[in-house]
Amino acid sequence: MPILKVARMGHPVLREKAREIAPEGLGSPELAGFIDDLIETMQEYAGVGLAAPQVHEGLRLFVMQTDPDDEATLRVAVNPKLTALGAEGWEDWEGCLSIPDIHGRVPRNNRVRLEALDAEGRAYSEELEGFAARVCQHEYDHLDGLIFIDRMRDFSTLCFGEEYRRYHAPRPKEG
Image (cartoon, rainbow, N blue to C red; front, side):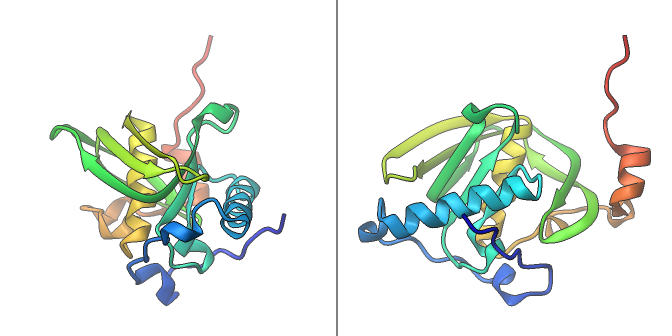
């Protein structure tokens, strides 16, 4: 499986609204291969999510795996719809494979409902909260031509990866 080239901030594909995948394409070997490549690319770059526009494909599709050590957290979302559940939210750090080595604090809803098709074209719906909801919203934004800095309220939190890891990243609990 090839590792796909990730579009970086400034490439027009990241600002375009992605198109829905036609029903006849669902479950096809071409789509299945692309999804496998998308997952492999996300994992190669140690990401927790990757949307098709980030690899130069303007399709309404993303993958996410909110725990790299747990295959059960892997999701494929084809033609997704996202609904905020409640008004509760919080601001936390985000990064993006399309904006390498830059982090910033982004406000997001704490709970969302994801309705989508899986890799075989079967419909599913699930509620996500916390970190999983954050990742889902981040990837969904890519399908509408948005990147995380578009959601930021305070640009003073923008920082390079080294400074993020040194001063802001969560530390392992001691003891």
